Length: 122
Image (cartoon, rainbow, N blue to C red; front, side, top):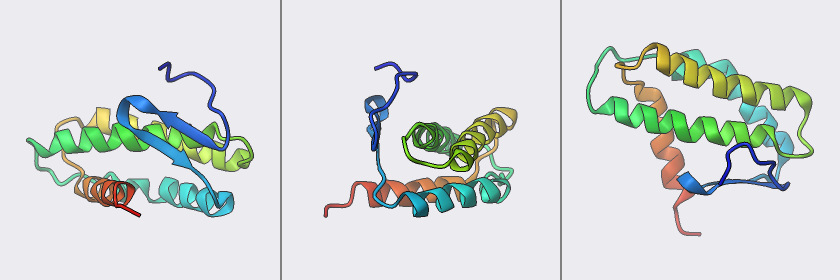
């Protein structure tokens, strides 16, 4: 599936990594994206450790940045939230490429919590 394809609101999907986005409360989602953008310097703070956990960081960056990019394409969100979402995705990718051998423990833990919630049975 082409990542640049337009998405059909209110869902955004990227089947290659099993990421789906359903937004039932757009206002809450917009606030969350704004908070993520503001908190990125803390979230992306490295531990100074390098090794296998950097693979977890790379996976977290790939999946969360895709989620943010998809969110920015959803019809009905504000232009501010679209911009925050795009900025956060870009910042995550750039920061992690600038520091490729440093694990980001806060990002990794946040990603693991998101995965647990995402795959938890209803």
